[in-house]
Amino acid sequence: MNPRRALARLSAGTVAYAVRTQGEPELVAGDVCFALAQVPDEAGQLLLMWKWAGHDGCRAELERALLLRVAKRASEERWDNRGRKGLLRRMVALALDEVAGRNRCKGCGGSGKVYRGGDVLDCVHCGGEGAVALSERALACAAGVSKSAWHRHWGERQRGVVLMVERLEGVSLLALKGGLEES
Ligand SMILES: [Zn+2]
Image (cartoon, rainbow, N blue to C red):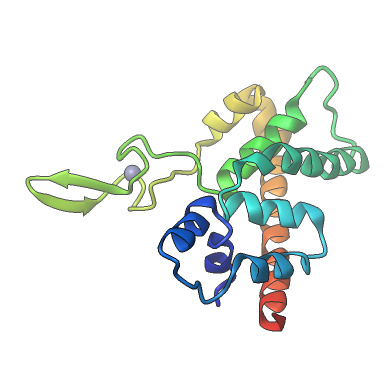
């Protein structure tokens, strides 16, 4: 089974539905939990739970775990973030929103669809995704960094943080897939 679909089994709604209908899901939550435990990185487990199983309660712990990694990189690469209190934390939050496609499109309100004259069309602003990438200007603003400083340093560092989260997700999904095949 696709690991993303497997994780959806851990969302509260799916479990409640299976109980209500006395349906026997082909893969029970316990199997998915077992597989999740095979993901070696705890931050990776939190990321999967947060993004794919809809456990919003994981977000704070996930942010803390990622912040440690970003802070480590910042010190290794000697990022000068003196006087920029909370910047690394905001970068982590922005990266998570981007990776999870949580920047809702204003054109369609996040549904990806627009209704015109009785037709349902893909939203032209987001191409039907429902989410949009923030512009560099919006990212700088949300991070609390001037446009010029963003251009010089922080934009590239932010892309690095997004890449770090994407890699963590890729590795963790792969490990979960391995765990699912075992169960
Ligand atoms: Zn849209």
